[in-house]
Image (cartoon, rainbow, N blue to C red; front, side, top):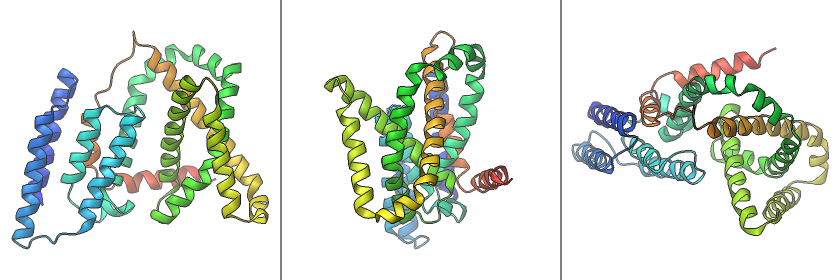
Length: 294
């Protein structure tokens, strides 16, 4: 398995250099790493050092799916999405990597943790400089519309997303659930934004809300919904506020093109991959648990 780490190191260092220097991830480097990785797996299986398992395929497919979702929501570039997929193929399996069942999922959470810290660090100057603009935008009338749409999306669909997480990843933490919900929220916002441009109305928002609420009340009894409604409303409102504020801050930082520093993402994906079989995620979970305690 150590040879896989050699390939990861070679690919990570190469793509980090090209991304920092030229703002580009070359397909040839990804192709060489993929061929090398497949060759290593073939050798390990042929010499009976490793047994083929469908989880290997599923891990790559999950990595590809995550990359595509982040690409189509304009969170990552095409090169970043492809690099993440190749790393999903290359990362060796281990006990720590399987905290969230598949290494590609652990990789993604690690990248999110590292990426959030680095992006906030790079954006601190802009956020401080634009603090008045951010404050005015947060407390403006237009934010009421953003908050309302956010609340409708989260209230109508978060139960469905959480149910899917509980079914597929029963051991997932609340942080992982929050992360998936946030990404889902961004996807639906992108869909609504593009649909509003073409339809000139909020019909797509109505469809999403109608589908979510109808599916919920058809799936669960009315008594259960009424008993949980108060807590569910508070949770949906809290998430709506947090997501809306993050959305506004990201918009202001993104619009400040003159002073904005572009963060190359290949090094962050590389670091997240190297951290897959470390205790980073365990320590993060412990920290979040400690913060939540009164």
